[in-house]
Length: 356
Image 1: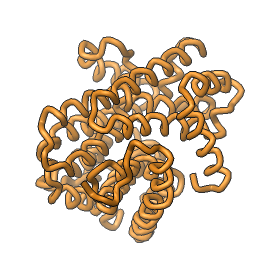
Image 2: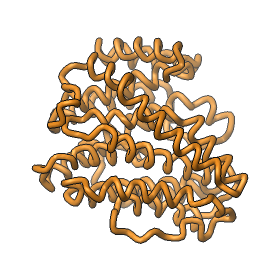
Image 3: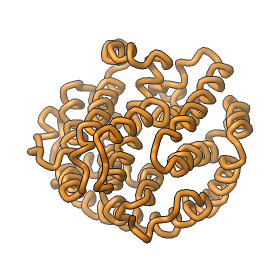
């Protein structure tokens, strides 16, 4: 085990090292991607690349918690996680912000998310059907960085198939959810329906939400540092993260954006719940099952801290205190235990200091 890695049994020490050791590496990596994005010849692509870094830094910060997983090389882990998450956020902007609604173009763009997880894959022409393409090699470089991070990862071949399964789900979500308003729901339901026989406890929209998380991929990357990793362990990780842990991650994201998405007519999976009572019940169920799932994994307290950190990070956002959802926020905090309430308080302080 890497002696520099914090013992996941100690939550306070974990958070301290997360902020003091991991955040500076994240900042350094993002600064480098910012410099590369600034060189994109096409103004529209350059603008979306820079905006995705500026406004979604916390995605890279949060995902980089896996740089503290036992046995992980911290710098290498942050390099991969930041590159992969930055690519995800950039592509999200391309399919959401430039008034393009082309299914083929979206699908082609998101081949990058899958090929980045295969170090032997030849890179596709990701902009083939997209109206803009002169990014100065930005997207190609993001893919290459991820592939290089995986080349020498001891046990990645054991979990590669599981990671790509999650990336394919993510790619389909991003392709369908950004289509025109009149067709996106039907397209998404047709895609989701065949999967639901294996996920009887969740709704179609909860399944869709779970596909939008990259945490399962980051966890599979982290465990691949273990030279003794087995295929069955990789399968267990994918199945324990998806749908519950991945689901609560994205449902919380949509939860705090309810008002904003309603006003801008953006698709929001939490908006499909019939009333606030059901929102509260389903979010509590996802929290409960996510915590229970951690007991199936090696280092369960690390994974539990991830779930608790998600709750603290999202519920400490000012948007969670919107009058329409404030009672649900308070209920979630009350039922989630002292660990979450402590992390919530800490996140509030970090937000005041503009660290988050």
